[in-house]
Structure formats: structure tokens, C-alpha cells
Image: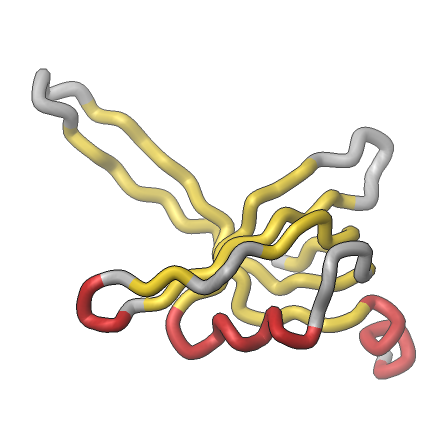
Length: 97
């Protein structure tokens, strides 16, 4: 799946156990009712965001991930995340097509 929009903010890289890295950014979509979406980039892709800054218009290739968590009461809770695997400047993506 691909999203287009403007980067609102970019977080610093977070490192967890076993040197797992994650970085998040907020993308404001381009549609009638723009949506601010929190998107994560993980592992060896965190450096992709080094080439971007807030205000940049981009195209982002994402995967939608879901997971289930069972709370201590035994109830199921579901969570979704948007995980980027590719990001390009919108102008460059248009000229490459």
C-alpha cells in the first residue's frame, strides 16, 4: 500500500533490547479530510528518514500490521501499526514514473 502526504514531524531513533531500532514519523495525508498518521520504520531502514525533514511531501510504501494482546483479565485487545518499507520525495517519485 502507498500513502502520499507531508511529513509533520520525525522522531529520534529508539534502540531496544538486542539492538532493535525503531523510528517514527507523522505523515499528514493528502485527501479531502487529511489524517495525521503515525508511521514507524524499523531495523536497518531507520536511516531512510535522514534524507527528509518536516514539510517534505513524500510517497510512503507501508505494510499494515496487527497484533493481539490478552490483558490480565483474559480480554483480547487488538492493535494496528503502519510500518514503512520505502519513502521517496513526491517530486522524485513523479519524475521517475
